[in-house]
Image: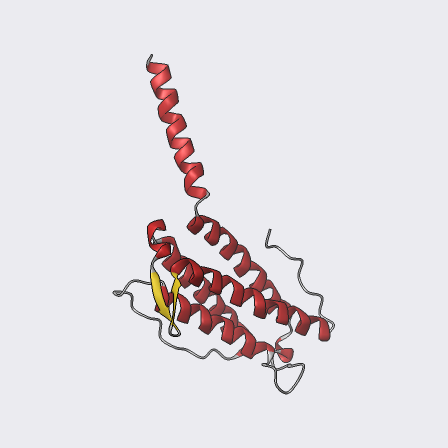
Length: 171
């Protein structure tokens, strides 16, 4: 009988761990980490002397794209996902490859820290996003979609400069 109770207890713990890994927040965080690693590889692949490259006059430079991604991560996560007691990051405009890479790392990590403490029940909470209500889940989707959009542009920038893009690691 004691072995049966221990087996049931162990199964409940294992099921709880598996279940926790399959919720929306943990699924986002896993994908977010992959997104971070892939974007950092892309940023690292471009030679620093090409960070001022832009394919047309109306486009952002490679560096401006990376800064824009970082700033958007801070804005969306700190404005719409973090609690009211959260202290917003100081706005810093990084210059050069080394500082951009640090800034991206900080931004990805900040989003991770904010998202990992959001209770699943709060993902349906609505926030006033640009005069249109959105759920916090929609904000998570916006975060990922925005990074993906600009990262795709950066892959084109690499190709236009004969720099082989890193192999995709988002699976």
